[in-house]
Image (cartoon, rainbow, N blue to C red; front, side):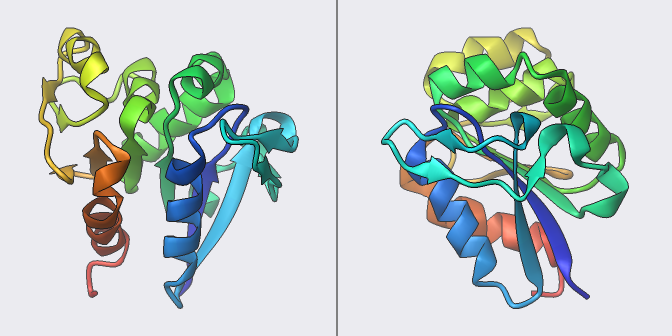
Length: 173
């Protein structure tokens, strides 16, 4: 069975935190990656790469997808966390107990969606206090798993992070 994964894109998203998951997850024969951006618009990463979405964040229906990936980028997340559709989507994936991956500042979307309380998550070190103030426990490891959440703090750990996420989406692997 094909697993459909939503990969969030947006203006100023961290280039490698977007493209590494996109290509790594696309390597899996039973995964299909769908890039979603606000209003389905093309956008530019922090390094100037163009993101061409297949869908809009506003058009994603949780029941139609199996997992969600939220890349980081401090400036990108400042824009994205104002997007009600993304916050509702993140909350919906969590309520459905579907796998959610976030890296770096992407954990701020988890905070805005109210899904870190009583959970152990990772994120860029500068948001440790934000995670703790939201009721979560901060941990800086290459991959932090807590139920359906798979988080990491830094792009240096993208390999272990994606390895754990692939196993979360496809437990038989």
